[in-house]
Amino acid sequence: KAGVTQTPRYLIKTRGQQVTLSCSPISGHRSVSWYQQTPGQGLQFLFEYFSETQRNKGNFPGRFSGRQFSNSRSEMNVSTLELGDSALYLCASSLAGLIGDTQYFGPGTRLTVL
Amino acid sequence: AQTVTQSQPEMSVQEAETVTLSCTYDTSENNYYLFWYKQPPSRQMILVIRQEAYKQQNATENRFSVNFQKAAKSFSLKISDSQLGDTAMYFCAFVRVSNTGKLIFGQGTTLQVKP
Image: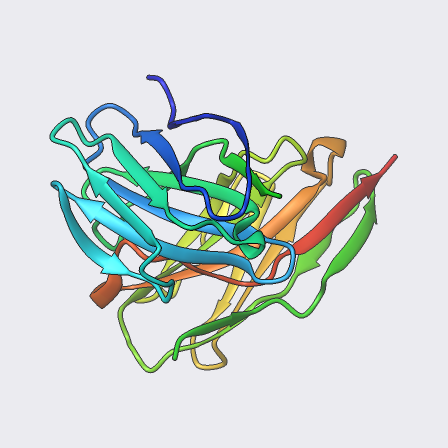
């Protein structure tokens, strides 16, 4: 079974631009969670989608948004990029997002904001 | 607020020896899961082991085992017979029943296995 895939793997943007990251979960998985990883803040939860609905949201500004499609693929959008948005963005999928479900991570998208 | 603390930013161990990574967490809930994830230099996060809070028996996966002390809110990871491929950053993580899709991570411990 193919793992979680994320595209693109690397991205360079300038301040003020917007960016869209994509995540394809493992086949059959319906929950997708997004995390931001930085050296200073570590791994922080952005949001989780299940069956096209946002079920959980972390403490990030409204510039960070996401959505999930009927095939469970998810996209994350960051508008008006700031230097501090430079990070590794990880997505993880799980079967149904239940407490006991393991989250399987993708390789991440490395975003650099200049 | 739920927090996860890993007090050892960096550790090293000789190949074939045993090492223990510590993790403490804080929660007022009774129903939760704990995880250890490994992130090698290639950056793909991999699940190492998980523990259900209501199970008293410590989880074991081959060379990896945990020491789960619920009352002390402690969840340490023991790696036996360390191998060079164990070199990675290790994250302790926590998820509670009321927020199932949200993993709360510790700051991570960088483990280097030396030949």
